Length: 162
Image (cartoon, rainbow, N blue to C red):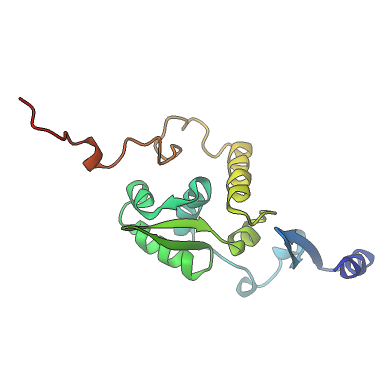
């Protein structure tokens, strides 16, 4: 792999670069050239799925029921589409599914990690750096599941009030 990397370095004018993604290597097109490629060669995530993907990356592992609380019933469709694109992993967890990002998510968004906790940390740093959630510190979107007020069942009184 290192000989391939040195070969690509010698050809500085080339269009390819070797990038380390987690514990794997990937050959990718250099970012300054990628914008000139045909649309068919790019991994495009529809705009409507970006908010769901961002929330999953920010809160992972995240229950699908929590995502539905935040985005509404369309979240089921978004998760299905993201899973078909290979961006999220959905595993059965009781009556809901546990959502987390995949290696393909890391490759698509340029995250150097594949470990779920490292991806979460990296994504949160990106959010802070870009100021994406500035002014939303008290928003329910940023709260962890354990910090949220819970489901309706959890807020109902257990005994009869007299």
